[in-house]
Image 1: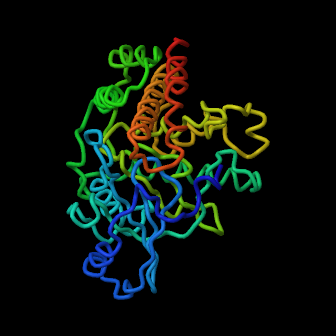
Image 2 (image 1 turned 90 degrees about the vertical axis):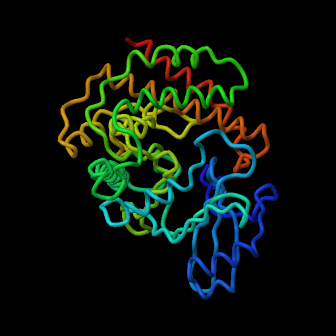
Length: 354
């Protein structure tokens, strides 16, 4: 799995742009005088915004751009990614240093930004093969710690008080992703229709508003080569102000997904413990202790999970829509988009327990 998505390849034909124009802009805006030596390759991973490795004689950078073509409303918000990472640079949340944002499409055809390349390990399989049980436990605890640290950041104090609306986060998300799903719908999915109808009237109350990542999962983190320590959180496209428990529940979908999804649902509690991996309940309890929260209501938790599986299904449908339109950023986009039905059915199964 990791070989499919890790590393770089030559820039794909449908993602090509004027590299000389980028180099000229780069020299002026990033200030790297060594940019006269300039090599660009494309990262394999990523389904949304095409991402490129830019190497000069002195440093490595990452260029992240919007895809070409007609895009869904409010999608591919590289400007927001740039802003939130810039704001979080002085906090306990590890993010790459961002250098410059370009909103002028005349340079390479779409908006883009440049950030530092962070060297480290990107771990794709939540089973964490090839490491000891003790390191698995430490990696999971570190993921938990970093997300709790994000949810503890005061948005106003870091200049993100206007980064989103306060209150009714899940309600607005259901409305947004229902519209996004409709805009890229390719076939009827009964479970999706049921979720769209059921969720608005059954959402848990929102206790507080924090910065939420929106896509916090194992493969959006960079770990140090020599320690179970997160050195960068990536892919902030879906970040906003919202309900931290909904954001945390998205992260916990791993316990509800089994292969071929990247999840842990194929392992029972005894096997998880033997491998050094926490059960979902132990992981939720650790987050609650860090945030000094009361125990999560089980009915609310199933609703959080149904909401996030619905949202994941809508995102997968959008990936399929881009694949069929020919402007997806990843060669595996059609395969990923075909998962929409299964995700929706898993989401409705959470509701059916009540």
